[in-house]
Structures are given as C-alpha cells and as structure tokens.
Image (tube, rainbow, N blue to C red; front, side, top):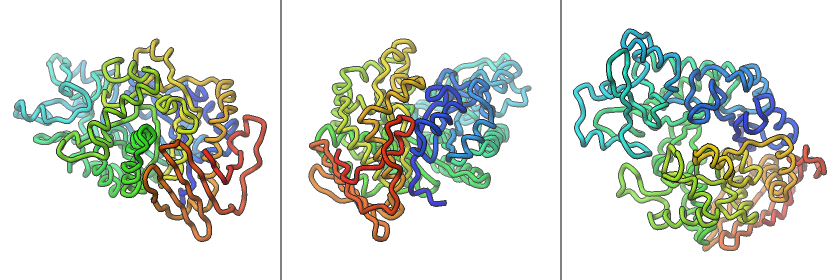
Length: 504
C-alpha cells in the first residue's frame, strides 16, 4: 500500500472529541479531508489511570466511557488507525497482579511479572545494578509482598506500572492476546511503547541490547502476521535509531523536534541538515507528542558517553534554556524535578510556546516536518497551535499535562479559524495532495538554509527554509487536481487549497 501521502493526527479520544465516536465526529466534521490516519492514544481500561492510559488494568478492553471495539472499527473504516501496544508493563491494579499479590506463586499469573531474581537468580553486585539503564534516578525495583513473601518487583517507570516477564509463557500470552484484540479492532499500525526497556538481561544495561532487538524482531513478525505494521518508540542515540529502522516498518524521528528548535534559536542549520541527510526514511515525523520534547535523541549516547550526539552538551543546555526563556518560564515549572515527571530528560512545553508563540517560526518548523520523508503525525494540541495549559498543570501537578489540554467542540472550531492554524492546514493539504511527495526527496542548502526538494516524474515540490530569518518559501509545479476551494465555514477549514508560493 502506498502511504506516501499519508498524514496522521495524534490525539486522546477524551481530550479531542470526548469519546471514540466524538473523535471520529471531529475528523469527519471540522477536520474533514485533513487527515488520512489517526493515532488514538490509549483508550484501554482505564484511559485516565496514573499515567494517562499507559498503565492499563485491562489492555485488551476499551474503556466503556470512551466506547467499545465497534467504535474503533468504525473509526478504522475511514482512517488508518494506530494504537499502542504497551509492551513493558501493566497496572498494579490489574486483576492478574492483584491475584499474584494475594496468592504469590500459587497464582496462575505468577510468571507474568518480573522480579529481580528472575534476572539475577544468584544476586547482583553494585556494578551490575548501577549498569542498568533507566531514564530516571534510582533502581527499577519496588518491594512488594506477593503471597506473604517480600519480593523486589521490576518497575522501570513507576511503582504503579509492573513490568512483564516476557521470557515467560504468561507474559508472552498477554502480549499475544492484546495484539489479537488490536487486529480484531481494525488497528492497522501498532506502536510498541517503551519496548527498549522490555527485555532485561543480566550483565547488560537491559536497554536496547541484542536480546531486545531479537525480541522486537519476533514481536514485529507477530504483528505483521495479523496484518499490522509496527512503529517502534525508543528515545535513544541517533545511530541506534538508524539501526532499529532497518528491522521494523517505522521508527520515530525524535531528533527532528530538538534540531529544529536549535536551528531556529541559533540560525545554525548544520546539525539539522546533517540529520536530514542520514536519517532513515521509514520514519514517523513528529514535533510534539503526548510526552515532552526529548533531548536525549540528539545528545551523546547515554550508555556510551564517548559517542557524540548531533548536538554537544553545551548546545543541549542552551536549547533547554532557550525553551524556558521563550515560554516565559512556564516550561521550567513543568520540567525535571519541578513537577511529578516520569522522565526528567524531556522538556514539557507545547511546541508553539517553545518557539515563543512565533507564528512564522512555528509554520517553518511544520513545513520542514511535512517535507521530511516519512509519515507526518500532528499532535492535536500542535494542530491548533496550542498554548501551555498552566491551569491543568496547577491542578494535576504533573508536568506533561501542560501539553495535554482538553478541547471542547466550540474551542476546536474557534481555533480552526486562527490564521496560524489555517496556514498549517494548507501545508497539510499540500503534503496530502501534491504528486511530488510520491517520489524522492533531496536535501541541500548551506548557512542558515535547509532545502528539501521532492521530485516524482515531472512533478516538483521544494521547500527553502531560512532558519535565521524564520522565513520559508515553497515552489511547486501545478498539481493535476487542486483541492476544493477555501471555505468560510470552519467545518471545511481543512480543505483549503495550498498557496503555491507558500511564503511563511
């Protein structure tokens, strides 16, 4: 299937429509014709747990407050649906873990959860334990009484998220059951959440080891056998992303967001151009997601610090401080130890506010994203050029909630009228409709310029982005069929024809 013109939305159903049916109504109504696919963030039971759905109690069921599997299938009837396979863990409130807590080894689910002794049956010394890679301080264990016996349960992320033992048939059966449920629900793309941490091996960092890669190969084969394609979610050194891309259908381009910020903050486009010239083409491009803006993806290797990144440590520090300055200090309140963050190596801020709410800079960044090879995903807050939700941050005390606004129907329609959003919709329409994007892309430019030129037969679409001036131009050959004309009704805002000049 040719997916060269695909553009996806990323959204929580409850925060962008209120339910699965409501999300579909937004896509079919105000956003009609804008997106070909949608990554629906966790809609499992419960969708509003301790980690916004990434701590499922029942990973194979749809939370009835959002709908049911028929609603997922109806959505999949009109759009390519992506959903999360949460590979590493389930909620401490899951029925299986509760039974293990009550009955210990007598529980049928006893082998489903990973303990320290499963990986280190003879114990582990200080060097082994400190060598475990974890994206936050401390060791990945929580003391829990299982059937009257005190055990160290593996908890990579939080003590409410219990890691699965994926070497055990019970853990494997769990993932197979969830994969079958997703395939039966019409899900086309499966995102392997936190898969880099899923396999623990004594004597290693237990992160993206050869054992992890072998596991990804096997899980990818299982998903493909069910008719699904695989997106791997790993925040890691850029060379590791290139390696992973050779083994799966797609990887995230997590390096693009910080490199674009660096370029726009400094006028230095060289690191961005270098990445665009070497990055894997089978990527999903993002500027923002439900998580923060990652910086480990462009920095030195966290496991082998002598391996340099795309940016130096000093450049990374300046980048983070630049976001804090342009957001008026709001991102600082939501980042690191300032709030209850599960990952202190990400900056929590909307991408629009990370650029100081500068429409020209924001549209340039989106233009580069949409011209970069791969499948562009637009986060629902970013689609509407959303500001930091400081009220939500204050209410929850959770840093990532700053970029997880709840939109009502009237707010969506009102934001679709904003000029910056209308211009973004034009860029999306160009990416969706111009024949040149079915061909190949060349990366050129010098100084503060990045030039991305797509060619397919006689069709050409070229972006010239001047990061120093935060200006861009787009030149195209005429497309054989133009999208429908601009509409005054916001319900048709997504069908506006792109301006061939594309002046940002």
